[in-house]
Image (cartoon, rainbow, N blue to C red; front, top):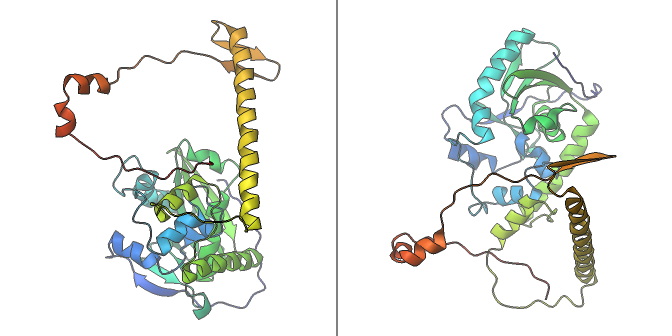
Length: 336
């Protein structure tokens, strides 16, 4: 059994138990999502502080301010979705954790709220409560497929550590176990203990994010694909007018830097293509080549059969009128 430990700080005032904000046993998914808009949940923690590899602060801000109608939502019943299998396998992971450790666990069917009125925006959903153990009180269940398992090679990923530390902050508990099923057949158990310094810093950064929500002001974009999609959702249309930023030194400097970065990328792209072609020319008809510091392959992909749409519409133009679909246009950012 693999166990990892985070630093624990024991010298602290005893915190009151978390408040039960709302029961979730008979709560619909839509109602549960609506409740989550009223604060930062544990699964929001990493995104709120800009450390979630899948979701930006800007995307989370859209959700919390009710502006997330545009982006496509994940279907909870989609069997291709990792979250679908995470929900299906959660009780199985919990049962195997209990069997391996001997700890008893039970569900907490509620959204919990921090007992401090000044932190009432801190919410948490706990997968399982550990009963009767002196050294651990919370169980967080995770699953990771072939691609996701790489994030666990060095232990618990940062975004999961922050999720659990948020849970400990809300509940006042001392430690949590993270049980993760990797690749559907390997169970690891990691221990995360309460760290008062980290919790204080986490609360500070989360409060900063919640301030954006309360002020209805979007946080800065971070260059991620998530932020790109959030910007398209936030500003889907242009109104045709022009803004004059010539007297804004900060934005003008940003524009100049963007031009320099693009010019540099263009030169690097041309050099990359040149180097690749030199190697391809040397390989000729070979499938693979070995070098002092690595290897390269140049193989033909398998042939595939696709529908010849232009020819089909040329021969049967009435099909376009019978089966039309609209491709929604999106804004393009161009330097002119």
